Length: 291
Image (cartoon, rainbow, N blue to C red):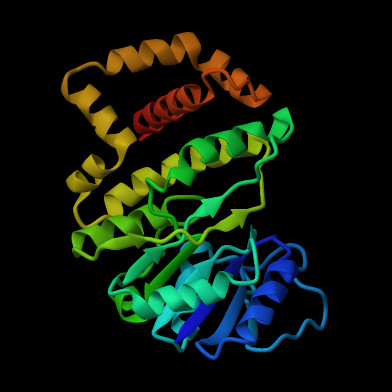
């Protein structure tokens, strides 16, 4: 049995929800679809929206990504919970059918479905998130919860750490704790379409917030030193620190940070992924110095 959980914040989910509800109506394996509106500033559904198997819940105050997912899990009645972000789209009418068939046959406890991004190149002011995501996130190297099925019994062992608020890395910490408990994560190619693209400026702002959350996630993890080794950027930074090379980051930050940031804001493709990595490394250094 499968419960679908959709955390939503400031995203209109009517198209996604209508498509999923239509598929679920033909699948007895799908028990329910739970939508949790985390106190959005605008309506996420048309007034009076009703669909079979759908429950719509709402927070009166914004609780953040971790609490919203935990709340959905506490409401779910099935052995499996499929989390899908509210700003997602689906490719076809067999999305839930494929999930049901796969989960019925797998011995895994956590299965990541993956993400796709639009194939058409967006305008330069939206290019950064699109290009970086296609080059990095779409490879499936990191653990993401925008399209993931988790057995309820496993979720109850870990859950999302509610001390992490704001944007970013609650899924990184969740994935790390899965690893510490030796719970393997399986990958299955049943992607959602990531339909929302932040502007370059907004994406950089979210990136700074996310790195601040990453440092907090490291301190909240069950094994902070192991956490550092699992995250590529933290591993590189601490290696530089151990060999007393942080002065190089300091120097390059002073010399190139503004130039690199301006190139990212303008959506310049040449060297963009490396430039974005440099931006993140400089941001991490600045935040560590502030702390």
